[in-house]
Amino acid sequence: MTATLTSTPLVVRTIPEMREAIRTHRAAAGATASVGFVPTMGFLHDGHASLIGRSARENGLTVLSIFVNPLQFGPNEDFERYPRDEARDLEVAARAGADIVFMPSVAEMYPTPAATQIAVSGVTERLCGASRPGHFDGVGIVVTKLLNIVQPDRAYFGLKDAQQVAVIERMVADLNQPVEIVPCPIVRESDGLAMSSRNVYLSEDERREALVISRTLANVPAWIGAGKDAAQLTAAVKDGISASPLADIDYVETLTYPGLQPPAPEAPLSASGERIIVAAAVRFGRTRLIDNILITTPEA
Amino acid sequence: MTATLTSTPLVVRTIPEMREAIRTHRAAAGATASVGFVPTMGFLHDGHASLIGRSARENGLTVLSIFVNPLQFGPNEDFERYPRDEARDLEVAARAGADIVFMPSVAEMYPTPAATQIAVSGVTERLCGASRPGHFDGVGIVVTKLLNIVQPDRAYFGLKDAQQVAVIERMVADLNQPVEIVPCPIVRESDGLAMSSRNVYLSEDERREALVISRTLANVPAWIGAGKDAAQLTAAVKDGISASPLADIDYVETLTYPGLQPPAPEAPLSASGERIIVAAAVRFGRTRLIDNILITTPEA
Image (cartoon, helix red, strand yellow):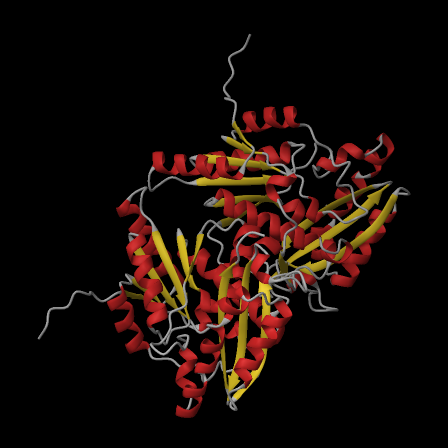
């Protein structure tokens, strides 16, 4: 028997209990209390664990939420079959350092159909905003609700969903939501595949072929260094990913970040002085994977 | 020289200073600190003073905001000529008991055009929601921003804008905004006219004729008691207001409150068991006035 260094997090399922837990913590910890928050849809992997670990290092209390939000899934998407494993999630949460796990039901979060909509324009026009209509409206409302319930000082989001981070940063700035958004690097499997709860859907063949995304994106810094412009870079990434017979490209785009607008056309990205994202969404069978690379180019 | 019982409120013009003032108060007052908030567009009258006074009685700190929000005015409305008088407002605020007056500039509140929209459906379909397109989107965003900046425990709103109260209560519930909304009764001039910053626009003739609104609405309880249904009640109120040659009716409607939907047709309201609002918007010259009466009918 080995000693355990972790303790079981407090599991909270209702909004009043969640508010009460935070109030109690802040009253006990005093004016310097800080609360970190990691909102997730569960089926936790090492990417989530890295967010929880960072929050635990930077705050006196870390709240993890696990809520598969129906409003951010389209009618033909995978809400029903999205993977769920509460027992395993609680083990990951405990090991990573979460103090409270908030796991509300759909009825707790949406007791009546929400009459209030939040829509962020501009940064939602392209990428997943274009290929998943309504997705970011669902993200906006659930993140706002969770921030209002937990009232954290800092909230941690993974950059695999780089557009989601850009949308949330814009919403938080526009609405003066009192929280610091902390974007965190993509965590990858040892062979390079970006960690995702949806990787579990992949067949053995699909899992092997899916590596084409990260391997192709890994060439982006060299291609930018070689003088490619945005259109040439996008074309090169599409070519690279299309080399896999199982890859069905939803989108590949080269954009500025976090504004998510097209960079100047026909100009080498290497001298643009912009932060550039190359983002891809690719289907393997029924599974849609996303990945991206962010590059800060030197000043012109 | 008479002794003064009031002290000058702290005037704050930037968001960081406002947040800091609240942080300081909460740190000093401890876990039981409560903050009350009265958001206004200034040009304060006794209606506003009653909101400030109630907040001062119910909370350790009262914040008044004065901000003429361009987003809630339509292109042909009175944003530019909306009355402003900062010096007088500060006197009223001091006498009524405000501790902090938050007076941000438009550039402080909207440093870039807001990319984030908040829209509440259902309760915005009728009344001012129908006759002032976009008005409640502007209200939703500015109230959300102010609540996120001030982070009050309670926010006080006058029921002259009864639809605004219904919209804000729905938004706060849908978004789990951590605040208690406190609706407060309409305050009237001694002759019955509902107090409004816009009353200053009225000519002497218009001011006298405008009394037709409150005098007509005062008959509503008797008309409900006499067995009128919603259509009959609306017609009687329209007839009453139309008796003034200067009255130009924008709308008169009889609805449930706070849902703001039509009550059962052709049934006496007296037995509906519903909370009923009769709301009117009437122009006198270029000035648009609103007023309403709320009645809780006995159970059927």
